[in-house]
Length: 296
Image (cartoon, rainbow, N blue to C red):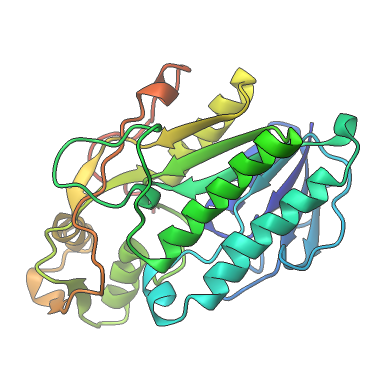
């Protein structure tokens, strides 16, 4: 099978590419090589891997493939609060451009449009969980552009007959994650002998999913051959930010004097929680369900 992977040099995308190659698939990786991209990876010389350096918002052609899976996006909420334009360009204009390129193909040559979204499109809730059919209520520019991309995809499916899959993933962590995210930031700060910044009192709750479990979920969906569906992807592994930080302190044999509490960011979401039963009904079970997996 031939995949086009956009954003395959990023965090989750690189893990997907790694697994796709391990399964014997061919991969064309389209990545603009931004600040969070991985510039050197073990499979760079793999016979079934090709890298095209390009921005999805200005791409003018996509070759024939079976699956187009879109990981390409600006992804750090704090950055979107400071400047939302790059998020609009990547998640809205970029997705629109990809959809137009797919629409321009003969129907027999159109790939499945597989889009990676986020659980943040729902907004937050103090209790209970979100289901795939619940209304979206994003709280910040990042999640708003991701929600907008989903609406575009579903509109293009209904109007032009483009088949799609959308996944809404919870917080991922693991190898090759850029240091602006909480867990790699903790590791970086400790290695640099700096304080770990924690927003507010650290009581905000997130569902933490190890990145390779996310990738296994994506392949479980692909292997099922379903189309035109949305799936929550989550290990249902809820931890407060402060508990995440304390876990990493234990890993590194450090004490809580390494923590520095800082003001909340604007529009801080209190708790994310989604129900992944629909995905689990396909037979997917995360390998790492409770607590954080120490991968290094």
